[in-house]
Amino acid sequence: MTRERVEVAVVGGGPVGLMVACELALAGVGVSVFERRTERVSQSRALSLHPRSLEVLALRGLADRFMARGQRLPLGHYAALETRLDFSVLETAFPFSLFIPQTVTEALLEARARELGVDIRRGHLLTRLEQFPEEVHLEGTCGGGTFHAAARYVVGADGARSAVRTLAGIAFPGADATMSLMLGDIVLSEPLPQPALVVSNLKGVLMIAPLGDGLHHRAVVLDPERTGVPVSEPVTLEELAGSVRAIAGTDFGMKAPFWLSRFGNETRHAATYRDGRVFLAGDAAHVHLPAGGQGLNVGLQDAMNLGWKLVGVLRGWAPEPLLDSYQHERHPVGAHLIQNTLSQSALLYATHPAGQALRAAMSKLLTLPTANRMLAEQISAFDVAYPDPVLPAPPGMAAEPGVTGKRLPDFALHCEDGVTRTLYSLLHEGRWLMLRRPSAGGPASQAVPWGRWTSTVVAEPQGGPEELRPWPSLLVRPDGRVGYVARA
Ligand SMILES: Cc1cc2nc3c(=O)[nH]c(=O)nc-3n(C[C@H](O)[C@H](O)[C@H](O)COP(=O)(O)OP(=O)(O)OC[C@H]3O[C@@H](n4cnc5c(N)ncnc54)[C@H](O)[C@@H]3O)c2cc1C
Image 1: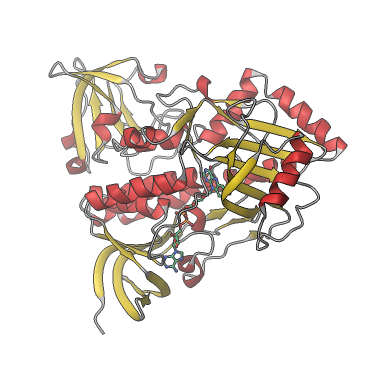
Image 2: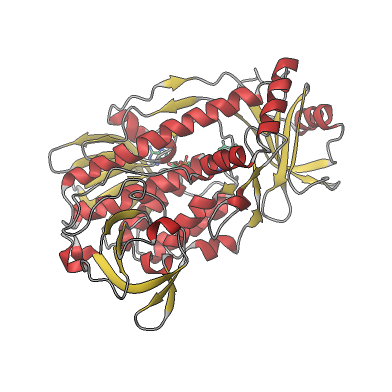
């Protein structure tokens, strides 16, 4: 039996697997994606990309491709409360949600992966996995036969029913679904009173928003009379339209369904994101009610966090324990995601009089700018920070409490050669970046132990966050977060 050798095997060619693969291939790592489906599905579960995900894409020079295919909406939602989340208060080049069907997101990521030379194997279903000290063996079926591969590391990005997670023996504790909601991608014959409509009353909760393709809208409906229907039971247009009429008084002339489906609030979180040489990312690591549109977004950010760390260890510029920081940094993010979707689940289900009163109180609270900011930062993942340094500080530099691990927005830099560049444009290659002020001495990249994976730029920031002003140089992580600062 021939066992093909790859550096990293990514199982699952959904958005998260493709994103990990892009991050690895960018650094020249040999990566193969094993995807069971022969074709991409035509329906889109996710619709929204939130501000941090757009920044993540911009960090790799990909945001424009996505912006060209989606529709910007400055408002998000928390549990479909009447007061919408206002992302426009966030300090970012992307203070909005981008409505873009998941099929388009996947197509764009796949195109990027192919540009970078990722080997994508469709029609490959993983069925066995065994870990050894130096590698992992994978086995599965393809085209009526079997495949055998050996990889230094395996990334399980194979979704909620992850085979990688099961085969690695990683527990997935949580709770089964207790309710189901209906979804319909339909054509509306009547206009909506607002571009994205939210209605909530004793009859249920309704959200309707553009699908982003210029033709369809997505209706999501929680009808308390129908939340006990199992997710496996098909939805009919009449059932969906009937519930919409009960809640909104009209069904907006919905017709021509492209996709009708039911989904639930099953909530689970992997006990660990790492077991030896096996990692989990995306839905393989966390599943929850898709409230606020977060699963794909968080998964893309898992992918970026894991990618550069695997690169560091595989290319020998970082010690192996760096890989543990993936669990350390991302598991708490998954735990918060679970908490905020559980909270939204309770609010969404509150269609009884007491629940409506609670929703009204929450909605009123959300009119307070601080409350809006707190939840907008939560849903957009701007509240994520990693205060603990992941590698020992380079000579002359230190981790700075309250600064290390924070995301940096994009800002202009007047560079030594007279050209003005943006911070993110200097991170497109996924390397560390030493940013030095012209007048400041301070360490150059040669002083950094992982200097061969660090670029140095001498530049004067034009704007940028206030808290960075005091430092003459800054070492920025490949994911656009502050690593270390040097004092003058
Ligand atoms: C109704 C609904 C609306 C949503 N809306 C949003 C939203 O607006 N925003 C948002 O961020 N998220 C949203 N989500 C969640 C989002 O769809 C998921 O979080 C996202 O698809 C996760 O991506 P993934 O790559 O981790 O997993 P998946 O997209 O599930 O991809 C996993 C891939 O692995 C493959 N695979 C599985 N098993 C194997 C195997 N054994 N061998 C090989 N390949 C395998 C599958 O075929 C699949 O292609 C929504 C979800 C639902 C249900």
